[in-house]
Image 1 (cartoon, each protein chain N blue to C red):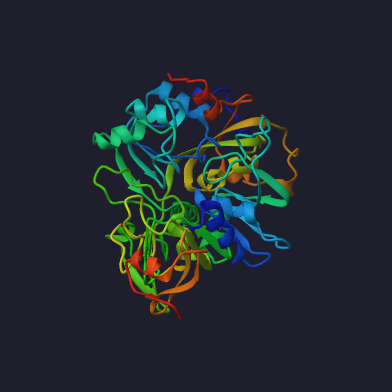
Image 2 (image 1 turned 30 degrees about the horizontal axis):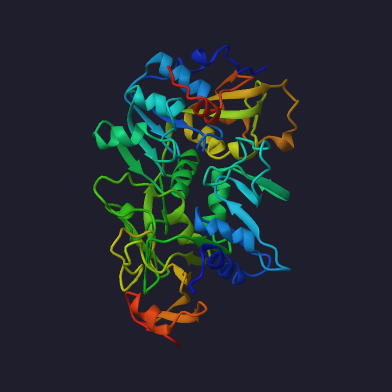
Length: 211
Length: 236
């Protein structure tokens, strides 16, 4: 059994401390908000200017001037605050956000992250706030499938795609395992139920230590 | 009494000249000053360098300004999205330039420009392709990239409430780049949903002080980009 997208997000949520200021990337990371562990509270930041972001509104209640960084309709919880982009990125770049959960194209054994461009010549490059988040947020978590759709490892000795940031990722939650990025490279922290160490080693493109 | 109001969007943008650097507020549809941008399309001003987080959506607002061939170069962080077709096509065809900037660096470059700071160092982008050609310096063992300030000849910003002196308040996440763009432009042009009398905005509630605003036009029922796209609208 491998972890589903929801289980990966739920597993990541377990490692976020109570009371954290959290920024969730677009896509799978957004699912983390559905799995806040019992008894904990996270305060969500969205870089377009809201601290205290709540769940999507009921159908018909959408406000085009209340959206998240993925441009989807959201709500504001009691105690929320709106602010402009300079304040928002002061929170990010100045180390005020505790945890950011991001998706990845590739992660290297030294914690380099590639998640904004394949570098293909006809691609329209688009970076958004990803480079600011990895440079400024205290703890960077990645949730990602362990391999690409074609079976290539996404956890590598070195990234081949253009980098988002160097030595920024601290923990990776995949469908197969939880893996830490330590000073000596990837360290296995936990296996998904029924997944073997051999399978994870085979699907990881860099050495994987177990302690 | 100071009164920065003008009677129409057309009059508001009439000062914008060919070749100008124009800061356009908004994050996606939220805060996008569509009525001012459409007035700029009507005016036909060209060779513009436009700064916006994105590159517009559908065939309205900024996307329509680009489609109309009025923009020489875009400076932005995220030039594609679900409903963004115009910019990608023109970029691939070599008809428009792109300067890609991380979103926080884009905001900070304008804050620096607004505050008389010519350049600053940031760790954002260090060691990535977006640092190529830029000065890199070590501070306390960490690598930082030097980024230059960014100023506009003009800013086009949408706010919620203005008074005739130019004091502004915004609505929810439509605030985004508005306040910093007001500060970073030589001439700031604002469309306000409501214009109230002087003294009616409490001084403690002013988000953008009037010194950063030059021209105000009341647009009480502003065009919303997302609604225009939903109805398949195309401008002009």
